[in-house]
Structures are given as C-alpha cells and as structure tokens.
Image 1: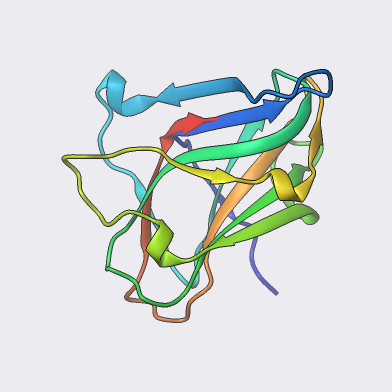
Image 2: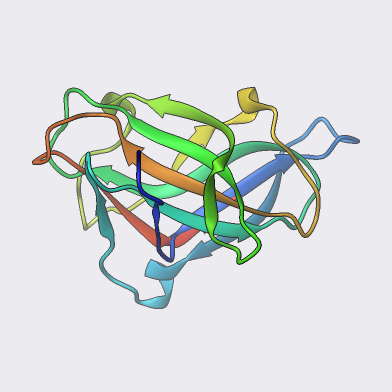
Amino acid sequence: MKPHPTVVTLAVTLVSTPAWAGTILLDQSYDAFADGATGGGSIIASQSNAQTFTVGLGGTLAQLGVQVQQSNLLTTGDLVITFLGVDSGGIPDIAQNLGNISVPPSQVPPLDFSNVVFSVFDVSSLGISVAPGDVLAFELSYAGTDEGACFGFDFDNLVA
C-alpha cells in the first residue's frame, strides 16, 4: 500500500475554464522565488509530495503550472500528477483520486537553478469541475523505480 503523500508548501498556478466562458482564466499564482525563497524538494520512487489549494474560480480545472525540473536527466519514469480530495482535516486523501496525468521526462525541463520556470501541464482532459471554496490537492510522484533518479520541485511557487 502506498503511504500518504508528504504535504509541503508548493509553487503553483491553477487555471480554470468557467462554464460560461470559452477562455482560460488564472485562478491563483504564487512565486516564492520572487519573494527570495530558495530550495525545494525531490520526488523519488518511494516518496511523493502533495500540495493543497483552495479554489477561487468555478469551472473545469484546465492547467497546472509548477516549478518542477529533472534533477538527474531522466530517460524513463514519468512524472505523475494526481488530483485528490482532502479528508476532514484538510490532508490529501489518496482514496479520493480525481484523476491523473503522466508527463514523460522529455516534457520536464532539466535542472537549472539559474532559470527556474513554471512548467504548465494541460489537465483539462480530466474534466475536474471545481467551485469557489473547494479544497483539493495535487500530488507529484515518480513512476520509475530508480531511487537515484528524481524530479526536483519547489512547491513554494504555484500557478493555477
């Protein structure tokens, strides 16, 4: 059984498409690097990381932007982004899996601390409907088995 994901502070952008509009609207964004933060974490085969967020705009979740990079020039093992509900205490709940996407390593930029950018992933195919005030989470995990390979991330900077 997979353990509960570690919850950390994350850099993210969340974007939703309101039911009444055909355009994608930015819900929220936070860039801790702009505020002087440094560091981050690793996503390895035996450890995933999750971040909760509170929805500000209703609609369908369309994109997730996160500062994530390949730290070991991966050639196998996808980055998996899973959206989760949360339990009554606000902790990401793996039993409330809302859907996931797999991102090949070739679509994640290599580690470069001099150029940390948001990688934006299209999640509209999941059809996740959101309403203002909903509390959800996303989990980043590594689908490979090599414990020496990892994705690096900074959950202090998010766009949604």
